[in-house]
Image 1 (cartoon, one colour):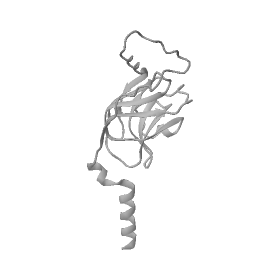
Image 2: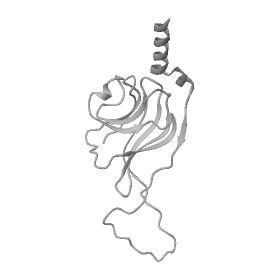
Image 3: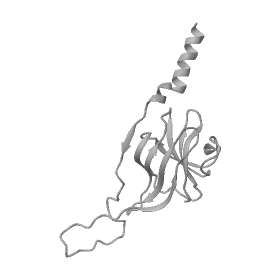
Length: 168
């Protein structure tokens, strides 16, 4: 009886079956640079209205494809006016799961669920929500050369919930 109880407790911890019925939503604003880039001279204007901040520049974008779980939405790598880079997920829709993370990887999007942890990854943090619009800061100094996709990765089971191609 004890073995059954321990096995049941382990299964609940590992699989977290209640997540089949849960979801979360977030709606983060499009990021903007707080200041002008270093070395940029501020120019005065005859207008008394402050200048609107320049929008981010898109470096790459792609649409999510489902893998282990149904996943859809858009991913884009943006460069802000101050040089900071951000991964922006818009219209994301995915399943909930244990230990979900957002990675940029050198693996091509789609195909084998398990391949994303075999090569290079840039780990951007835990998935903030299963639905909506969200931003992930790419650490300063990170080389984007050779990165080919963004993946919603389940660390607990080493599988991709979904991925989107990004040609960086």
